[in-house]
Length: 451
Image (cartoon, rainbow, N blue to C red; front, side, top):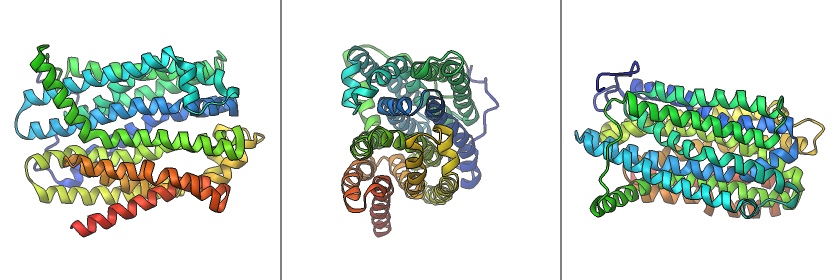
């Protein structure tokens, strides 16, 4: 089994040139992440065209649940990948395999608890998420059919990072592409020919998540390189060790979980503010920005995820100059990607909104006016995520967590509340860019002073 491979890339994290090494990881990761973000984006487009503004608003109400599950997956994915990278740099392969297995088991338990709770109390959950009576039926339907796919979504999120660390970024990319294509095809079929509405969109997403999750399991069970599942003991000592290890992984990856949680906070706060000022049409317009934000996040996160194994491995090997060079490459790439996304959203606002909504909808005009303002967040967000990923990779979990809290909660919520009072409706759209800008200033000033 050790000799099997999938045309595995030869990645030497300790001696390979930083530029080519980063590119070997970045481009497959970028393609895979973009396709992965299509899981929610395609939902929005088909629901908007097939159901209308109410459908797209209902899906946006439930989206935080999807993001919490994704956040748990990314938290354990980052945490296990960082720790496993360091263990591999120390030639402790068995320890890396145990870390990986523990991450999958504990994370699945947490996601399972969320799914069971949401299945038992679906109406209460959607109302906690800010659902209005008008949207309740559609929101509950979407939630119930989405839940079965969330455990597989977790497996995919963790698996992507560990598969890249195992030397197979192209396979990781293929997992995300296949899942996205399955989602697109089934979304169209279930929303339009079958006319299943938001239920069909949720079922399509669940099946796509299951496809991606199963491909991850097939990799680790059938043709891994160094990383594979390791049988754990079930003694009290072993269980305590598992809790200790997963707690440490969670601390390292917590900032990434907070990034997803912050998007949920962004949606919750935004939904409340938009519905209070602009009604359900405002929520539908804001929902388009929320559908696009995972794309912005995916592109920025591709940079952070591509540098993570390089930085973590060299951190474990005490090669500080290689860490500094990797960070410089990461920041440059993040700025280029952020500017590119911002320009695309500026120039393509009308066409993008038209993908989601009919021009006759009231929400259409609101979204066309607001999207260029929202787009200003892209470059600052990309830089913030690059720095947060850097601090995670060198085990500075507290620093990365503080920065994530700044951009996702401590700056974001006041901006959402204060800016509309100061400048009206444009303040709703500028709240997210303002929070990212303030965070970017804090991170940059602190980094320059420390260096």
